[in-house]
Image 1 (cartoon, protein in one colour):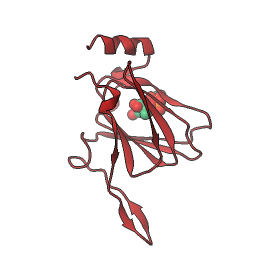
Image 2 (image 1 turned 45 degrees about the vertical axis):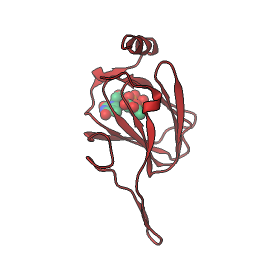
Image 3 (image 1 turned 90 degrees about the vertical axis):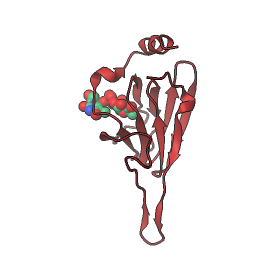
Length: 141
Ligand code: T46
């Protein structure tokens, strides 16, 4: 697995199928609109004001994080550089490469974070200690 940095992560903008009268529809499809195939979808919601989520990294997992409703900020950290992304449109998603420490914060009231993941849930793929994360990144150079 390559040692990615925060500049390998970016916002992907999806098409909007727009109808003046009936609203919008956005499609995310394996093999066309995403750089990975989706094996799992989960969503985070009912986040109390001032709370944050994340505070961990993944060794192999690729993800797309979408503000399905409301807004929040995702800060990615590759051990050397940090980048923050405001997610506030359901037709955009943040593509997160493996090996990124992530923090999700500043959730608006009613925000829903929908996450599309390249793998099923695997506890062993998580690094939840920041010093361990830094060692992991430094040993990959
Ligand atoms: C990530 C951010 C954006 C499961 O049982 N299955 C799952 O697929 C997931 C994602 C979680 N869980 C359990 C594990 C914990 O007992 O749900 C509980 C909360 O998980 P966690 O503390 O990891 O939640 P977040 O919001 O801090 O992190 C999650 C994802 O775990 C993580 O991959 O990138 O959302």
